Length: 90
Length: 387
Image (cartoon, one colour):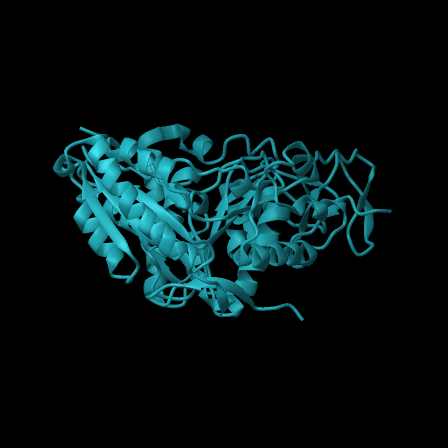
């Protein structure tokens, strides 16, 4: 299947959806990995590429964009409901 | 193998322009009419009209530097500075600063010339001579390490940080690895990434400067907007899938590639170091570009998701769209479509396309913003109200 997400850096554990992916729909990662979306991933939002236990770093651009505030499963939508900003605002 | 040189105009101070403009610079908005009158009559001249030069206190030094910088820019072959006479920023001082480059520079003061028409007549004589001189200057082959590239984003969307900005980051790395300079600015769009950027500083002092300017920008946004500051920093970004300010800013700063940060400069000040430089400046595109022009950028790359036609009078601006939808919707304004990444194109391929175009633009090919004659006004950053 044609990839429907973008992975910005190879060390990232989230990818960005290129289309609305329905719950149960296929997440197709460039390079061939395919797995089901656990819930709807809206266009331009993030999907977890692996299980991210609560407290672990969510990585995009090869950098931390915050910590998982809940256990995030592979294929889950990642947004403010399950990600908290760890460091100071600057 | 790709060429690593271009045909540029070598200035007496050794800097290299990719355009050969005669800049007509009013030192105060009151002199705009005379500057326009001169440029209407003389082909090859560019008026840098603006709304500043007097009636302020704190930023006079910054504005004088930014106006002088427009004349110092290597894309300017010669400069005519036009003052009124009673303004805070003196035409003679701006002209003297530009003259240090060895370029032809003249100034005139409207109150000393007997008014608008007489001043314009004298200005036309000066400008004709400068334009005639510029017309016979020849391009010669120069290495790309002479280039200072301004990095700009505006009207961003959810994919700016996924397609256009990372592609431009590869262009930045390409130039910096070859000894050139790139300037990242728009400090408000770095909020949340001080710890990441400071890690990339070449020295601890540069790292401290990075942290200082970002903290100041963050504090200023909170002082002015209070609890609404986070909305100002990230309007609509949550809906677009941004979950934190770090995430949004990371998307902006990836224009700067992956190299070390060699220097932090104030608004409109030219870097003294090569490599990746940060200029402290506002996120407002028009003011940001004026600062990049004053800092000596001969070329700018401008990424956009919503689309903007903005350009700059003396500096070619290459527009890179984040989606194919935008490149079709605003074909008149977009030079390169990074949205191809979303259809399976590699970031490297898009970066190659930008580099190839940039080399052509350095040789003289016009960008869309130039063809559309964008850049009719110089917007300088301000930090205090007029009185």
